[in-house]
Length: 102
Image 1 (spheres, rainbow, N blue to C red):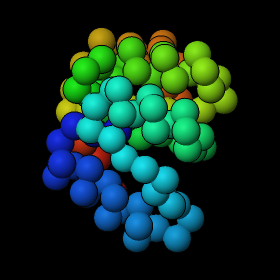
Image 2 (cartoon, rainbow, N blue to C red):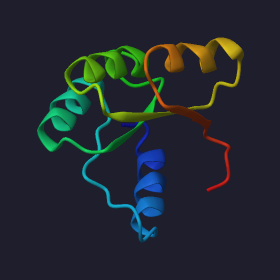
Image 3 (spheres, rainbow, N blue to C red):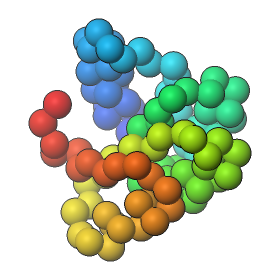
């Protein structure tokens, strides 16, 4: 779940090039993300903290209320402690920055 089309494309290309992963869907806003994740029921969701609509943290909390076993990996450009702790407290299983090498 990423609001920037270029970043969504980069994530899609990476997932498609990795044998162990398959892309189940993608969304650019929180409303579409919640609808699609609940319908598709993926194992893992990669989500931007700065998602359009509700931010990624609120969207993650909403998804985890319905799917507590869902693994959410938060992705963002922010590197401050505040931006790392908030998604983890919301239930995300991990956190990476957009400048992390593939």
